[in-house]
Image 1: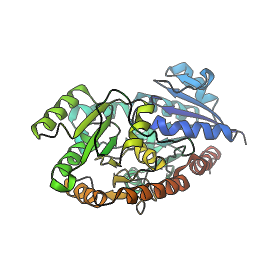
Image 2 (image 1 turned 135 degrees about the horizontal axis):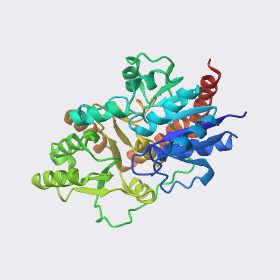
Image 3 (image 1 turned 30 degrees about the vertical axis):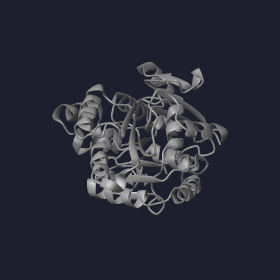
Image 4 (image 1 turned 60 degrees about the vertical axis):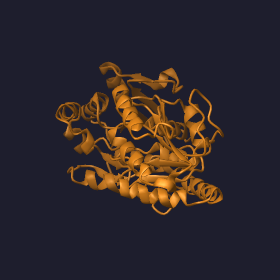
Length: 361
């Protein structure tokens, strides 16, 4: 089978919560199956792709790369790169697949006038409607995209993770203070839409039930957001129970996963919950917002509404487990995750989508 795929993603930097963490496994699996892949990106980061596989974000380079591809896959949808690559594919008559990754619609916390104007400027709705296929992360995104009058196929195709490569590193190393007892880990971008506020409020309301538990917020965070968050934590007298680890590298992410007792993804918006799959691969119990829970995990992880009450109920259930019970749950999650989300399972679904789209079926 000969199929040349051009991927478009804004950044290959493997920050906490970045789609690039997942994409690495897809590219490797496609290569193992004999499919050629190239990537156009604005930031190659330390991804380690061969130079000939990287396409710079330049009009002529994009035109040539699209011309040499059988199918184009756009990962993410808010930004000039997605728009440019999709527009070039449409102009050349090349089929393209779009995975919005929750970016087709902004969360309520992000709907401020200047951001809305910027989003409309960088996101042409016709490009999404004209895609040969659009993939949704889960049923929530599927229902949201259904209202968009898409011309192509709309289907739920989960992103995968390289479970065979995942290894939890016991203990935490690095420049953060020691974390006593058990801790809950939020791994990903830290901003108002991440759900960190209802997370912290719900834990504060647990009272004695939360004794012995602390919180680690690990991921990219804007300097002003960090100042505001730290000031709020100090006002609540929770400075000893909350740690912020800004922009942890991949090794630190694995170290934190290895030491955490529980991962929480309380997001208030749709997005690719890479950290949920990382936690499953590391054998850690998970609490996830209904907006980001991957398909098929409702009976495996604790799914809740991203509200104070929803999170508080979930925490009470998880905190009531013994260490042995959490360990057993984590081992079960790893096996379920491998069965559902390892790229050996997920990549063939994308390949079938590519073939169908490229043949115009």
